[in-house]
Image 1 (cartoon, rainbow, N blue to C red):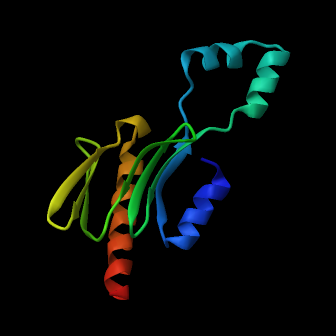
Image 2: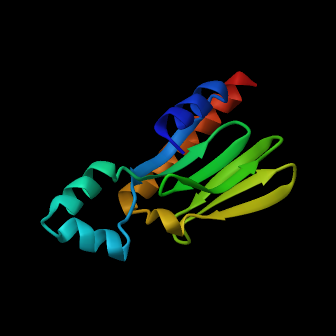
Length: 130
């Protein structure tokens, strides 16, 4: 998923990016990036992969290495909770509880605090519009 597609989703569905970071390198990517050659220079120019966690009023999207890993559409999000110990995002929608593992994002302590802060802002903004 490109940055342009992500920005379009954020504009049309009034969402926020909870977390965005560069993707981790695979084994072969790290070998190529460590070699001093034309191949590694070309690889460096083409490698722009990111991981993102996007929350809108109707859905949650987890993007890993520029590909959608999880996408879930909701009718009405009642509550959101981030569990930093298990690195999961818990959503209650019409009395159903959904849990999304965020292990693929490799969330650090600082990023965990940022996610909690943005979730609070998102829920406060949602309550003001209701």
